[in-house]
Image (cartoon, rainbow, N blue to C red; front, side):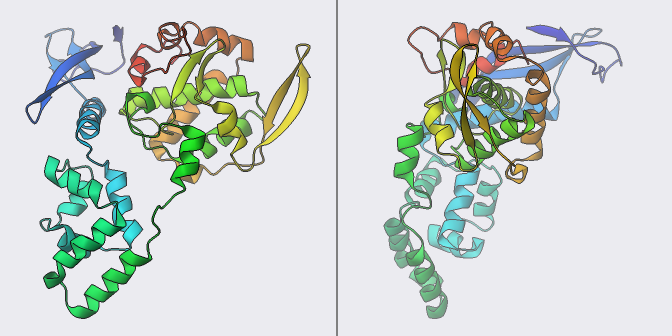
Amino acid sequence: MKKYVEIKSPFTGGKVKEISTVEEHEFRKERFSVHVRYYICEDTGERFTTTEQDELLFNELYSQYRVNHGIPFPEEIKDIRLHYGLNYQQITKILGFGVNQYAQYEKGQMPSESNGKLLSASMNRQFMLHLLEDSRAEFDEAEYNKVYQSILASEVKPENETQKRLIYRDIRRSIYNGFGQLNVEKVSEMAKFFICKEDGLFPTKLNKEMFYADFLHYKLHGQSISGLQYQAIQYGPVPVHYDTVYDNIDGICKEIVVAHDMESAKLSCDSCNTNVFSEQELKTLGEVLAKIQPMSTQEIIDRSHEEEAWKHYRDGNQLIPYSEAFSLKLL
């Protein structure tokens, strides 16, 4: 796919074309198919990229590698430390990492496969206590006892995983949730954002706004906002088990109204908390809202039916892989 953009060539100051395609890239002696974007200078034919384009490539490449090897994502690595109430020095001693290594992993540096598996295993509290015992010589008695009590006092699970699985089903990271960590708070505030901005909303239109927001963010940044999975049904792309998802969001009210000679549930809410989103995520939500808000429910259904993401997966209500984000026509 090629399109003209306003950016100028750094070589001649002339026109450029943006190229969006799929390429194979190697990482740690493994090859992965990733979506790439780059510019071509029309005068010289030279290729160049922006920081955002490079980040998109590496985000998708690293996400695939992490999933394939069971390596936690940066936010999960940070959650481990915070869950046990440890500082960088303490958790580094327990795991036997180098100085500043844990902090770098939290910032996105890719752990080795062996360190990645150690990090995954450390999510288990009992295993973490065993590691602490093995590293006892690294601590004086007072600090050891403090760390031991901190780990021991941590909850077995930071969230109700059983309830999350009942509502959202498969919550493992994959191409089917945009390699995003299922974030119940972001799911809730994302839905409430659109409902509040629309001053009430029917689920059919809300489903499309949720879909386009997650898929557009993946297209731009290589990761979804909510971590939700989507499937193609008769009325277009929808979050999996969307009725159950919306029913379990505090602050959303449901009113049965008659529209087009049939009863429908209209959703409303008083407020949403946008502080849970990053600046990039808020920008994506705003862009989707600006595009879809003027549309009627039927218009957005019709437009979603033009998407390859729906056409390819509508038979059997299949899950839609986020790789289809790069074929979006509406955004």
